Length: 162
Image (cartoon, rainbow, N blue to C red; front, side, top):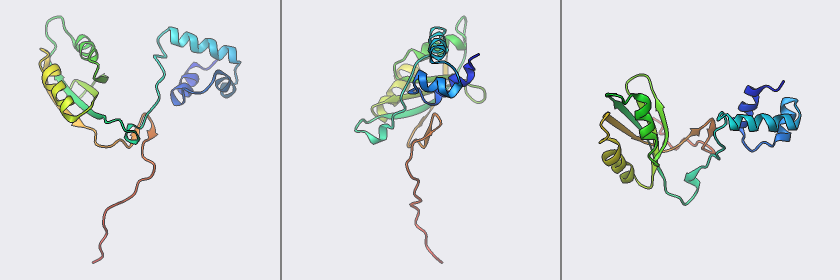
């Protein structure tokens, strides 16, 4: 019997693993792994495969921000509908329902800080259920999705002796 949870963990860690490699790691037959992966994709458990790109090492200028949103569900529009509506914006990369001081957490990207500010001011904040937003710009990524995004951390602080 194929360990589905272990299969999913392996794919999540490295989506480039072949069915043959996965089979060897799981002690299974390649056909069994291929069938399991196809089923997991069909069931919507595996939603897709994405490469993790360090955009800071390319010529592409990209600004990312984390936006915290407080909403007030009204009428027939609850958290699910509000989150779904906000998730439809192309700028929104992630949208999570949160506990604590705010209701929804978004990660968005744009070409400039101004693009993000205009998105918040003109498209997000005017939505009727949105009570308030708080935008935090990402200045540097050190770790993303479990992978270090920095090659070597150097302490560039100046040390003076007394």
